[in-house]
Image (tube, rainbow, N blue to C red; front, side):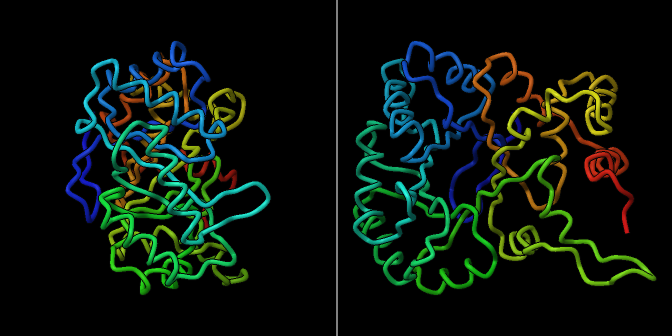
Amino acid sequence: MQTYRVPFTGYQTSRLVFGCMRLPREYADARLPIHAALEAGIDFFDHADIYGGGNCETVFGNVWADGVKREDIVLQSKCGIRPGRYDYSFEHIMASVDGSLSRLKTDYLDILLLHRPDLLMEPDEVGEAFDALQAAGKVRYFGVSNFTPALLDMLSPALTQTLVANQIQLSLSHYDAFDSYLVKGYGEDRTPTRGEGIIEYAMTHGICLQAYGPLGGGGMMRDTDSALGAKLTELAGELDASREAVALAWLLRHPVGIMPVLGSMNPERIAGAAKATDIELTREQWYELYLAARGQRLP
């Protein structure tokens, strides 16, 4: 497993992250995918306080009884989503972290992400919560999820910490962030295609991009009839790899340094996907997949 130094931290972790949103409700069942990830060399685990109503964190907290050492893995969780609303108040951020720590049976989170933007966010209040959590040793580093560059610019001045990550939806079936690079050609509307400049911002500011849904929620992997499905199958044969590994390698190839967050609970798929870090797609192969996904030529 290829490793990756998470920007602004001292962590050298697996390039792939294991997403715990779909963990089974009982540890006897959850143990299989968790240990499949560990055996594949994945040591970065992504949680959120709302996954399974908190049960996913509770289930994962049993892993220590298997002899897994806390210092050998990176634990990340997220907060800010409540039934019917988002909440970045000081009180909720603090209470959410305390709940995650209790369920995960640990004293600290390596990284805390703000889950989805709170329309009523007060940056100074978020900064106060981050300072309190860091001073108490409950969270070491902080980041965000689903944030635009404008939101990052709004929040960052209120923080004493550097934001280390932005987790966004990104895959061959959700590639809008890549399209933001493109400008239409001669004789056409020359307005840039809609995009928030998320990738460009991450490259400029050194923020780690984590990609959730990197396999399109599984649907992309079940599709073998479309142009993209056919191209994935073709390249998988050429590279002697799984289709999942090829799709992940497409993300890994980009120079921004994307960390895909795997959501599969299937041990065989986890093992196959982990081989993505051994694949170096050529420029031609990367664009072949991009064009197949877009279904249209480049401007």
